[in-house]
Image (cartoon, rainbow, N blue to C red; front, side, top):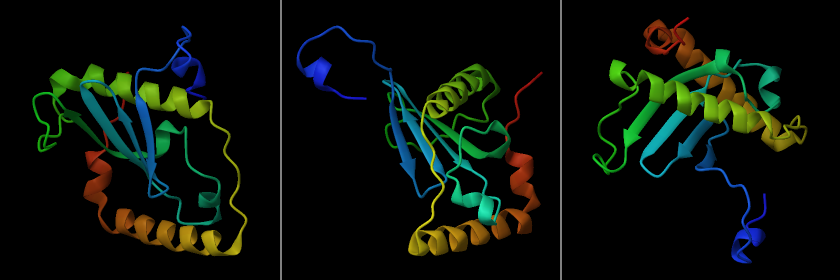
Length: 141
């Protein structure tokens, strides 16, 4: 998406958040007031060489911060039942945005090795700590 139309003063549709991809599995959406952060859970095998997303089944831990009232990002609102609708809206915005991205299999040797190592270590951490699975926030049906 080019910012050129905005710079030229044209009226164009534009999303209302910034997107950040960090450490391969981490994602963040920055809105005017809120910041949503999540991570995808790695498989720990060659499936990880296709960059994650959008996959609601693989979303691990999530965070939401109110940037107006908590600029230091000290209070995670993701577990606040009163913010559940906001969490689901943020998650949906992430998944919809990522659905429009073109994901390509990683094939070069060095990143393949690095991502493989990271994925195995993160997956092993998840497997060693079942309490993390219990902390995942699942959509209410």
